[in-house]
Amino acid sequence: EVQLVQSGAEVKKPGESLKISCKGSGYSFGSFASYWIAWVRQMPGKGLEWMGIIYPIDSDTRYSPPFQGQVTISADKSISTAYLQWSSLKASDTAMYYCARRADSGWFFDYWGQGTLVTVSS
Amino acid sequence: QSVLTQPPSVSAAPGQKVTISCSGSSSNIGNNYVSWYQQLPGTAPKLLIYDNNKRPSGIPDRFSGSKSGTSATLGITGLQTGDEADFYCGTWDSSLSTVVFGGGTKLTVL
Image 1 (tube, rainbow over the protein chains, first blue to last red):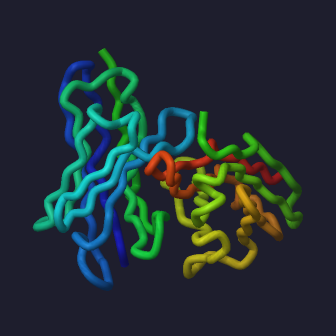
Image 2 (image 1 turned 60 degrees about the vertical axis):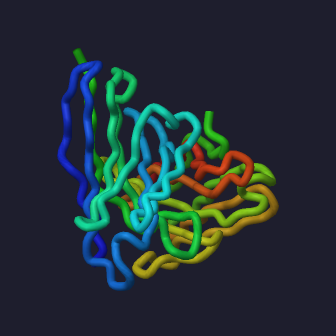
């Protein structure tokens, strides 16, 4: 069974750095590295926002314009893990963050992580 | 403001049918496949429909999808109280070079 397991909830202060993770397992075909992994933000009470995506095989990364320069997406294919990181958090980064696997046949997401709640407050 | 437009809420009685619309443009829905996601309260989104009208394994045929021009529709028949959730449409936007989602529609089963 395919699973994306995300790291636990975080409470941080403005200006602090943070790196959250998403570990994949149970892929029946190919490997973790051969599927694009996306990050999606959901602010409290709001909808889904696509932040960007990474291809773990070669770390090819694409960002949605609002998130370019605000976050860094990375991956370590040797441990089947993708990351989302901030160098200086803002209160407006408070949200639930989901990782999701892009299906190999199109721009849709067939498996999702359980979400990581990030709270930024002084 | 979302690139794709969905009604904020829809409601219907148990056993009835409901449709949820998703409106876009030629740069997204008009020239790309649409997917739909169900987000039950307090849980992660789950893929419901892909490639406009295909259901992943395990999704009952009460859920259906269609697309016409720059709009897509999710249909749910035989409504159950357990269907209460937020529903999102999504697709690739060729002009923005990003995935775009609708603002979400809250389904209430009265």
